[in-house]
Image 1: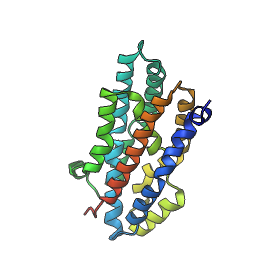
Image 2: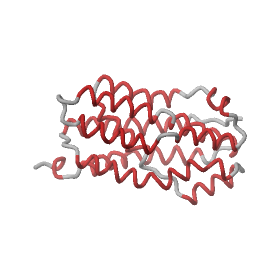
Image 3: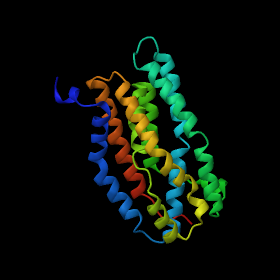
Image 4: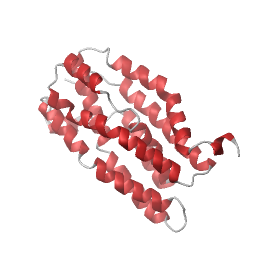
Length: 226
């Protein structure tokens, strides 16, 4: 048994995420140094909404693709179950995000009119390509990244105080801070239960690295939103 086979699948995935941490940490550190704080925080909350609104449609397409592969792929059925279960946990989060922004004075129609940056298109669009043209397993790498960094309460307090935005604007962010640790444990358990081989893990690793790089690029591209 080689080193790859002797480690839990989730440990290997987490290891890939940890390799990307310096770039992500640097992007967020620079973000919270930018002024004006209120407009930068608003831009960040809009970015979160742009990402969140893609979550359920992505998982729905992945589950449908699994249905198409069932009978010829051993991962199809358990992946479909995971995606459909996780959809039930993520539904309407994008609606909450719009409501939070509305409480901060951002009309939903204006939020939706903001053109998603190329970084978001790369982050989300690559998953559609891999789901449709390679394997829906790759979406797990994307989800693992997005669930891996639950915001700490004290950090949200700091962002709120520096920005001057109302507490209601951070409701969804706080909910994710509470839910993401359990979701991360759930996806770790899914990785460990799936009969993944070396090729499967290479797929997930590519998705993880691409997702981290695209997320960092999206954060670095943020500019004040008035």
